Length: 213
Image 1 (tube, rainbow, N blue to C red):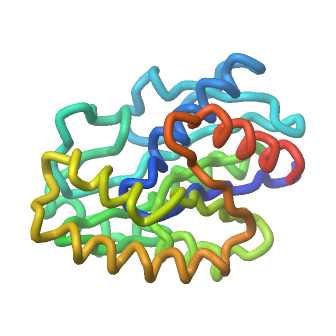
Image 2 (cartoon, rainbow, N blue to C red):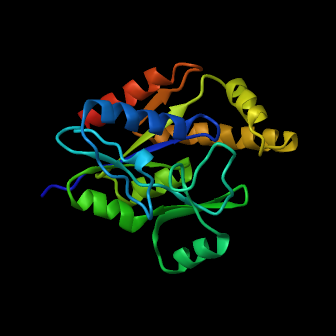
């Protein structure tokens, strides 16, 4: 059986990566059949998939030590675990990649993705650019990186201001990080602009990439 591919949605903070990924899964489901999400106790809300190139598309949820934002749910948006649990997983080499972003730990579970690919299905993950490039380096042929671009830095600034967990003093730092991340985007396989209030266009472009890859 031919192994599937790992599709990596990445981009700057606040660009809308998770919203876009959920849109891809929902629209994929409308065109295809159910495919279970993978991850410990994954929520049925993410049990979505499509026959993309005769393969199901399944999402592997990222693990994080940070607290959920008001609109986020455990095992729906992320696998939220304690910092102690996260560090235990690091020691056990559970992660394909992991990173410390603004004091919070994020990791991609190696076993979850391997299970999806081994069955010949495609996997979808949402991670930052550092993690995306680390995976691309390890799996150059079976991973596809898709960088979500903002319309402008001002768009990101306005989104940061709307986040209750982002202090005004942190916005400048996050924008500087975003500039670096945008510079790294040239190393990705594809680029898609997420225009304000036009997420459906972004979703459609990503589905086209998945279907042709």
